[in-house]
Every structure is written in C-alpha cells, then in structure tokens.
Amino acid sequence: MESLTSTMIILSIDGQVQSMTQKAEQLLHQYLSFSHGQTSLPYLLQQWVKHQVSALWQPHGIPFLPRPLALEQEGRRLSICFQADEGTEQIYLQLEETQAARFSPESLEMLGLTKREAEVLFWSAKDESSKVIARRLGIREGTVKKHLENIRNKFGVQTRLAAVMYALEKLGLVNF
Image (tube, rainbow, N blue to C red):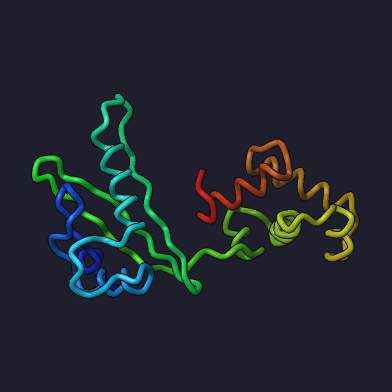
C-alpha cells in the first residue's frame, strides 16, 4: 500500500498549488481532468477548498471539522481530506483512492445484521413490500416484519426508512 504522504497537495491560502506529488496529479487527472503543470485546481476542487477555508476561519465558536470530498468513478472512490496550518497559511490536501462502497446484502452484514436481516433490509431499500420480500426470500410475511423489527432495534431507529438511511450513512454511501 502506498504511503499517505505520496498523495499530497500543498496550497497557498489563496488556493494556488505550491507542490503536488506525482500520484496526486495522476488522481486529479483521472477524476477531474486536471492537466500536468496547472497551477490552479480544477473548479470543483477550488470551490470545495474555498468553502473549507471560509468555514475554518469564520468566527463561530464551534470547532470546525472538515468533511472529506468524495468522488466516485468506475467503482473507485477518491477521498480528499482538508487540513490547514494557520501559522504558515498553507493548506494540505490528502488524496486517497479506495474501492467504492457497494450497497449489497454482504455490505449490510458488516453493520451487525444477520444474513437474512441483511437480505430483508436490502430489498426494503429497493422499495419492495414485505409481501414481495417474503415471496422473493421464500419466507412468511410475518417473518419479514420480525426481521425488520430486529433491524430497527439494532440500529435504534423507528421506521423502515430510517433503518435504510442509517445503513446508507454507515456504509458511507450518503452523508448527512
């Protein structure tokens, strides 16, 4: 696995590229059509950095916790993390490419669900009724409802929709 320092971009406080590793340049080219030798970031990344900078130095009394920017392409995910050094007025962007999260019964099992609970939640997320899910899985409709009750209890939520949203958020597929 490549070290984290090999995918770094250093910016001045006004967003101009001061230095960039070769791997970071390759990733920007792949995800954002960045050209070799550019001194400014692609527009989408510029806007995200500006938002992070304005939130960081805005007087609000609440600690600023930047959220990574995530871009997906062909089953891969590029996460860009923001850090700023107020003393040197430099911005550091750390890039990391990973396999994109998938929504599947197997991924739902990683959240602590049994195989059958994961299957029930998966089909619930696809807007299938309890009756259709029961038929699809070869179980009774009452069993589907019991699995949904167990899922809601495990996740600490009240509704089927809340269980689906909880799972999507925990899998990193949506951010709230």
